[in-house]
Length: 284
Image 1 (cartoon, helix red, strand yellow):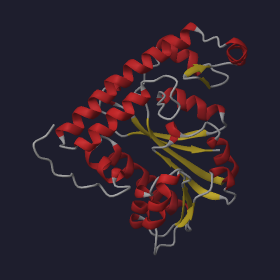
Image 2 (cartoon, rainbow, N blue to C red):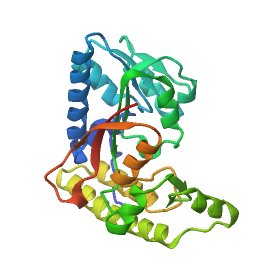
Image 3 (cartoon, helix red, strand yellow):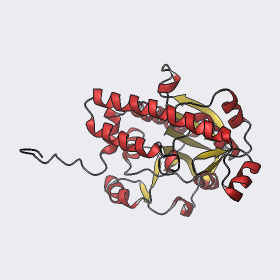
Image 4 (cartoon, one colour):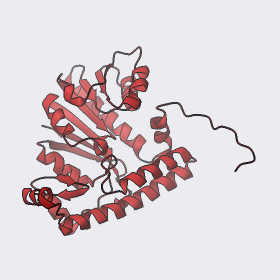
């Protein structure tokens, strides 16, 4: 029990995104990379690009994009009830279109799809939706916090030679035979268990680094937020917070029919275990 306690000032709803740019490493760098990509694409296109930011939360980055590059037609999509009020409030008085239905209900062609920080939260089918409305010559900009690369040697070869990327209760299956066996009796190949163990070990190293950096920046709220995320991410069967290796996600996009145009690391000079954020440019 405390002898006395003052109530901490409440953080305004939706401001976690702003805090992350201060306390979480590599996010601000990711913002700048994406802004550069959009600016370059718009210049090459020669007209106002139609941009859809999917699963954008309360729209912190999208609003930054609109302030930085105002000559765009911006659409923002989010169907998470907790974020919708803040999203609508953020874009009052702007020309941005706020769309709060599921992504599967979106039917307008767009030139750029932004998926920033949301890929590891999304159902796998969302990429199929993106393929449906990405205009010819359009660009998918996919940036996320991945698990630093843990697939090397035979484990990397397993991913590179995969005919499918299928996540079975947190384990990566790579072909139809493995999927059939899992669906029949829950069989998980030993090599898939090995890869998952490597993922968990690398994740823990990454989260320790992130939390240490947040504490050094006096951002306790960010440190606590990341500890909660680590708790979920370290549960193999938790689908809500599940970060894969960059190699695995690259293979997943390849199998979905996307072609990688560019790959940007937010911390290219850091050792592998400190490289988590990557920004990808994909076309169809």
